[in-house]
Length: 428
Image (cartoon, rainbow, N blue to C red; front, side):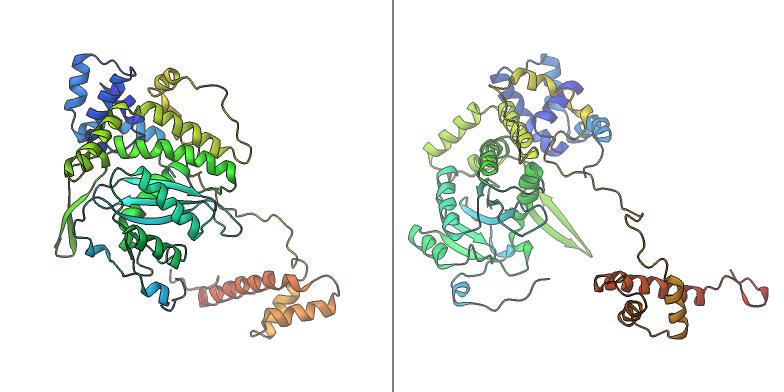
């Protein structure tokens, strides 16, 4: 049963025990339909009867072996922004499926300079259904085209969008598009990320979980991201349960939160009852026909290509699905298997990589500081340039300022904590 549970955990992309408990019945059924799993009846019944606590207990050795993963200027309101009403996190009041929070995820690698790919993320408030669309630039015309694409992908009508105050959203092009298509358009409050808590959660749980924090730019990377998202949207929306807040209650200084049982976005949509019968039928058919192992294999292949940019190695022919399935029993021994996952931070550097430019003149500078405690680094550098012409350029000023700060700190410490106590007394 532990081996079967390990396979199901890997097939679900290593979700937590409570979510895995809700995903196991659907995963087993889907994997058996596609011929990936053939469990003994006793093992099958045992896995289906496991509680979330038992699942976490059995998975603990694998998780221990794997180890741990690793203020803006206030803007004045503009006439265009005033056309879009504000909606806070407390104003939703259980909307029907079709109202989406929208946000951008920048694949900039830590530098906003130049051009890079953005992912447009749309998350349905009622069900958690999430769509991910890569864009080569953050431009209003591409945003409108992405909304059209999202309307084709989602299984419910697009009733409303809620964005932040990004200029790519708050502009006449998007406002006119929403007015012409009958889509309700609202925005969050500036600098209040909790107003978009649903999509912000998916930014980390899906986008960063799948893609990481590296920089991606160019058409080739966008194509790989599109292939990745085409599989990830089905994998997450059909087979990955998620939590949804039921209500919360303040008890003294603490807030007690109660959640609905974990369910996938597709299950929530079908249970809601608002979908037309034909749409519900197609969604059920999609759940039955989708192969979670094949989708996970596409995700892993795309992640491997992204990790190899700018020179990705394209696979030759169709990958062996049976070999990938067999590897799920042993992947936990490897550790982190997502090639795009955040890398371990490098250890802090405590050594010098260049020679100290002020090592030879340090006694002279310290003598100046003894006689002139208020001497500045700028005046000291001017004196050094007069005495040693051409050896200390103006670019050494910042280095000398840091050195002054360090010397003054050591002098103050020696004053407060002298090495020798007066009259030999030790007060420590």
